[in-house]
Image (cartoon, rainbow, N blue to C red):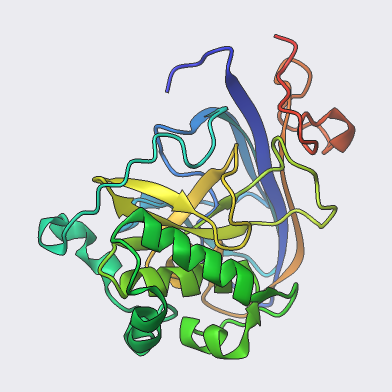
Length: 301
């Protein structure tokens, strides 16, 4: 994606602190994916105390960092400027369903049940509720509409054990639960669908006032390309930054620890800035944000 006057700059990142009682192997999946729709402008990442980090791409194309936490506290900070287009998620949305026999072999796994997206348990409900919709985007949108309207969002209700079918039964959850249920229902109709984590800043919409966090949504493979759908907000957004994708939240976890360590502090940011005014490493100063209102604003440059 080429830089243009219509490109927005999103500053996103986090600061985590981990406390370990012994050397603990760990992996992080927090760096934005290599994607033509998001251009990395500047980036800083620090580990305190410093540690050796091995970086690789996993089977889903996510950028993963592998390292070990020493005993005591380790603080990890990531700050990045990403250039994104002003267009919304539904830009160039073309409804061309891909028959399952034409799905590329490497994408067939995204049509199958997984640990949290237990689509095999939802087949009867899915066909009764959505079977009359046209294949492709109309059915996907109907699924997102239903999840958005029938599942209640409850902050703090998330559990690492709850599956999509259990969310359907209990009727509430957090963003990962909305995504898991929408993914599982879409897979019931052989639509390649992947779970996605990322940042969703409040570009051209009101700031709801809740603490910033990572977000979960989904992408469906239609017309031989991936399109984003978000059952939690259920409206096209601008400035979305994709971090990781996979079968479900197992592949999208921002950290995985293999020993006696725990997350002791957690701070996330994602907001639009003017790169001529704000620099990487500056304090997080929300008075300098360009988003948070319904008006789409641009940098002075």
